Length: 562
Image 1 (cartoon, one colour):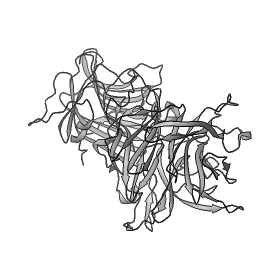
Image 2: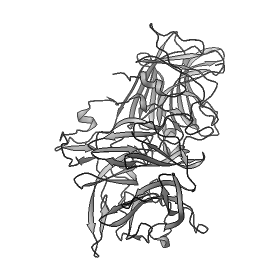
Image 3: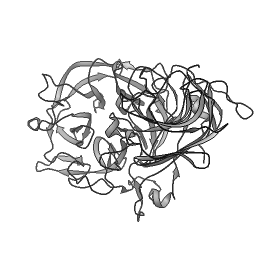
Image 4: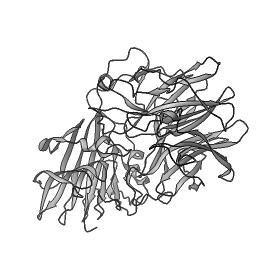
């Protein structure tokens, strides 16, 4: 089954054409056809009752935020310095999510030039009020906090309106009296007492003038118990339930010590009192050697269904060995239960202490929902499965500056080889990436390309960031066209990576296949001729590469002469 790419024309600054006959590469152009991404996760037992499978959004979909409008649910994620940015998903059952747009889909909305892939848009928060959708967000190292709006969450979204406060992770709370408040994470009022000492601030927001009003003040200093030196209180949200205000935030940093905590107040501006049973979600106390672990859980958001049930979405990761994972932080979901304390105050519990995040969960009880049984990837999807990718899922590195894409038909695209290379933060390379959604993945495509100068190349790149990636494809070396595998595993290595394997290239188009299984991979061409086998690709893991993103895989073309 092929990826239908015709709507890639929606990517801004992409020159598109439809040719009546099969494409012939122009000078400096690489033609990619029959693009496939198949993936597989570890098998689980067959479901015995109606269930859904975690994660609900596999792959690089971190920092989820959710809102409900009637019977419709909308979810967004961080996308950092990739373009288009902030994917927007829709669902009516909280389980099946369809991407309907990207909130940042015009190059002039935000400029990611010069940014590392883990900068840019951090932790957007979506809300719905009085017929209008709001996304409030931070563009890190690119002007700060802003708000955009849309009548239709599929877009178009307005141009950013920049807001007058610092920090990151803002979220809008709409109170019953019509007032709006923004909470966010920033430095404490005085000098930090220790590394990771942060605070949650609050200030009123005027939605008509789209600006902050009144005075801001701190509502959480450090975390739920500053005497224990909690770190990285962030990702705050406020909810109002039965007349009480609840402030929920992440604590511990977005790695193995991640957690979610909750505080409550009678007034929106505080004082907020922490729940005695915090955290309400974490996996940090569990045995790291447990089978098929889900770790680093936190950065949650809550949503209430029309029948009164509550559910939490949050990020977590699935290591394949130790703390190695290439797919990035993913979106999970669990039902929320409310527990009263000795004072009769209710508290939302996402997961009791000591329990593991389940891979299979009973379906939400939603009116009119089809109660179908959801099976695991190993039983419902036999072998490798084709991910339900759409053109909206294709990503470019940073905001596009030069047109490089030609769409020939729904199976074939052309990339003009630009003199802008992956590995250079100032570049806007001719690259289109798809998220690796599971631990095992096979990416294949047929490429037709003739390099013209030393170092020119076109092929497949599996990318974690500009310093950590794998290239497999055609290149010119010493005046000859070769097939090569290169790996970059740090900023001190050559920009194009270290050559791991090379073979003389066959004449004409060649089919390339990258077969990734956890931290190892093999690379072959044609009907299975191996170029490199059992290659260490743990450089694609967050543990080694750092940052907040996940692996992308897709076609790439570089040429010194455009």
